[in-house]
Length: 305
Image 1: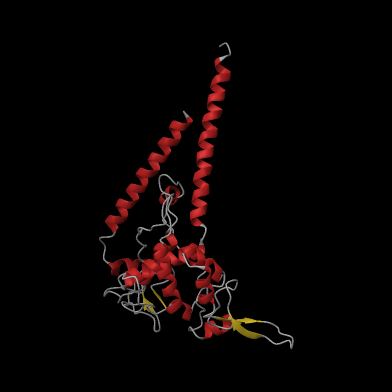
Image 2: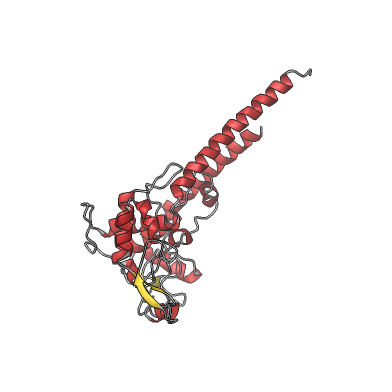
C-alpha cells in the first residue's frame, strides 16, 4: 500500500510539473518588454529563465565529452583568464581531460606563480608546476575590483555549482528525483544563457514610476542575468574569436556550450565516478531489499496463521 502511494505521489508531481511547464510556455507568448517591466517592478530576476539544454554529462549515466572540455579549457585560457581566477583547480587535474603528464607539465609552465619567501625573506615568481593551481590575473581582490568598475570578477572554480535559477514548486522537487527528474545542470544552463543572452533592450520597458527604462551607463542588458536587468560585464566572446583545431564550428553558441561544460567539470571533476558509485549503491540496495523480502517471506511461510 505504501509503495502504491509513493508511485501515485511521484506521478502526481510529474503531472504538476507538466502543468507548470505548460503555464510557462503560455506565459512565454508575452513580449520581453512586459516581462522586463514586471521584473523591474517586483525586483524579481532574471527576466527570462534559462532553457534546459542537452548536455553529455546529464542524467544518471552522463559522461563528460573530453573534446568539449579541451575546447572549454582553450576558451578559459584565451578569454576568461584575463579577468577570472580558478584558484581551486590544480593543473594536474587536467589529466582528466585526456592530456598526458608531459602535456600538463608544458601547459603549467606557461603560467607564472608567486612563491617564497626565499633565503633572503623575499617573495619571487617562478614557472608553475602541475601541483600548482591556476593563478589569479590580479595580485589581490582590491586590484581586481579596481580594474572592473568596483566589482571583482568571481572565481570560476565552483561557478557552475554556485550559479543557477530556482525552478519553483513543484519542479524543484521533481528535479531531486533521479528517475523522474534528476536535474543538476542549472549552473551550465545559466552560464550558457547568460553568455548568449546579450541584446539590445526592447522598446516599451517601463520603470515603476512609469518612465521609460534606460540601461544604466556602463552596463549591458541581458534578460538572463540573475540579479538585475543588466550587468557590467560586456559580452566576453563572439563568433570566430577562438580558433578550434578540430573543425568544431567557431560560433558564440558553441563557445558558450564548451566553456559551460568545462566549468561544470572544474566544479565537479569526479562527477562520473560519483554516478558510477551511486549506481552500484542502488544495485546493492535493490538486491538487499529483495533478499530481505525473500527472507521475510520464507520465515512467515513456516508460521501458522
